[in-house]
Amino acid sequence: MTDPRYKFSLLSRKVLLGVTLGGALFFMSLGVILWGGFNTAMEATNTLGFCISCHEMEQNVYQEYKKTAHYKNSSGVRAICSDCHVPDPWVHKVVRKIQASRELVFKALGTIDTPEKFEQHRLEMAQRVWKTMKSTDSRECRNCHDFEAMELSEQRDVASERHQQAAKEGKTCIDCHKGIAHTLPEEFLEQEHERFERESVPCYDCHSDMPRPPADDGW
Image (cartoon, rainbow, N blue to C red; front, side):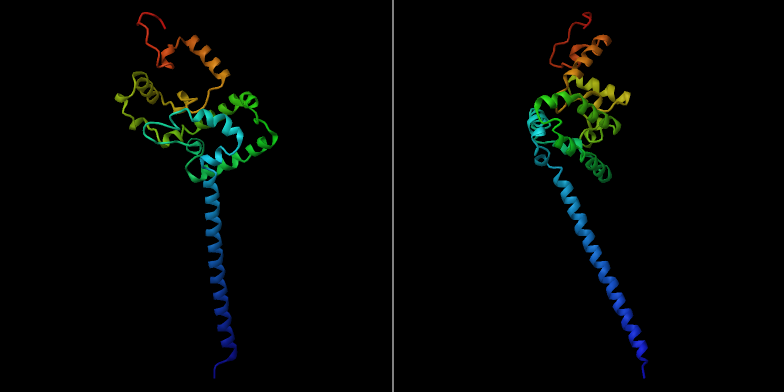
């Protein structure tokens, strides 16, 4: 005759095993749901619509961006805000989202809620972005652009020369391409013009639509 205590012990182990497996399955399912929800929400904040949902962005930088080749071009390829300002690697992306959360404070304070206020802070905001891009070797730019993939012979002479020089000197995209999608701050332009004059940099190095002067004409 089977000992009743053995039957009870066997039943207890089955119940315990069932509860353990059920609990594991529940928490796994919950984890998948939460993870999926988190990623979905994070990707939703990467859309162009989300980025320009506040009037500070829609009325200022978005209007500037719409006039550039990153918004509309012959190939039909568009780079939106997140392509340039949000890292693709997941860990860096989460860090950037956390950093961006502080912008809600400035939104509440109305720090740049008028065009005049925005212009007052344009240089400060631009320099912060430039510093970040410099520190990452223009990581987001390089998701699309690569020195090795460039057909330099098809570029304009000035662009081809500058890209070859930049590659040799180890420069990164943001060293030269500040203001590629947004208006440059007036203070920055003044500082750069003064530096160019001191260093005798030819005007046509930046203003590529200008005809080059004779070789013996100085500028």
